[in-house]
Image 1 (tube, helix red, strand yellow):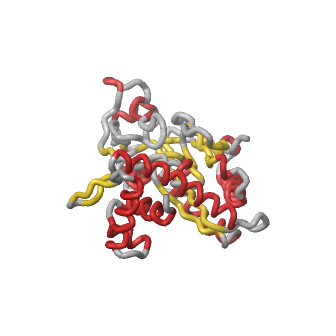
Image 2 (image 1 turned 45 degrees about the horizontal axis):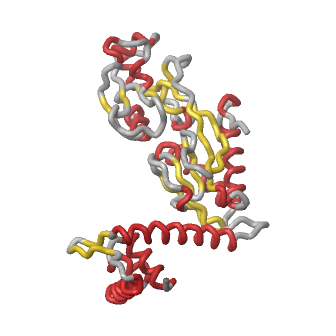
Image 3 (image 1 turned 90 degrees about the vertical axis):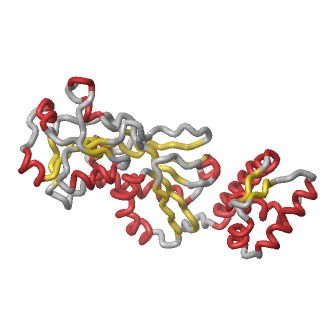
Length: 304
């Protein structure tokens, strides 16, 4: 197969149209279309169904796309590794983690990392769904559950604790719960029961003390831990929030029933086997380990 035509095919399959692929490749729409037609003729199979709304891969096109996607992912990884100095880390680094952890804990620490390693081009992808590291959707993942993909290297980064929090203004108005049973008289905020949660057993608050019916009522539900935190900060009610979200600069957020804690959540630093010797991976991992040790008590510190 002609490499240039395969590159055009990959771009069209990713973009879903000749026009958008042309913009990516800096080619005209007609030039892209000619390249695809020529590739189809050389293979003697159609690769796309043409529709007014765009392009859909045929069965043969899907097969070629899966292979091309893997090839380009491997090439991208190889290119990054070849361009990286063994003495001085540089080049692109894509990191993915959950929206809440990335927004509240990780992002404020990025400036310090980049001041130490200015030649690393860091991209942070916040997504509560797992990106595919083997296909280079990201280089590193910080996950709140053990990775399920094969051929991934994982390191335990930290243990996350979750406690109950309420805002000072809410507690002044409604009183501070002294026992688990007191929660029955308060406005509780939780994750939707039918939404995919970024951590296991996210609504443990609602089952505390084995309430009648098995679950406490809520005043509000939202499918984002960060939004849950903002709702508590606004004085709406009480919620179970990971401690890493709670900023020391916000003394108006009060930990309620401090001896009550949610299930242990283990966070993992994960990357593909092919990147084992990457200097960028190593320095980012070491930086995070140092920041975790500085930020959290010994019970939260990472293990080997």
